[in-house]
Image (cartoon, rainbow, N blue to C red; front, side, top):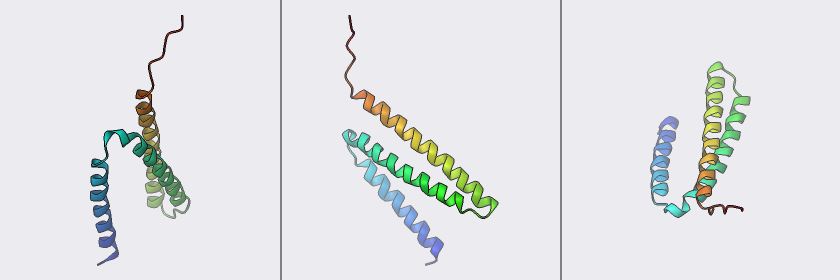
Length: 97
């Protein structure tokens, strides 16, 4: 099996496993799962920055910059969604007279 085919197989299997794992999560666990996913996206962002610092060609530089932008959008969006979800669990504010 060639290296590229092995990597593609790992990717496809991880997509299926990831989908099955997330699909089986109950609704009460989605907020903690999102928080954990945000931490993983932070690690991905650091990895993308590391790859960008070692880029040697124009193509690799462009792809690494695109990875940085997409990882940043994904991470910030995850924190926004998590914040909104946590706001739903707070009680209504009482009016001060």
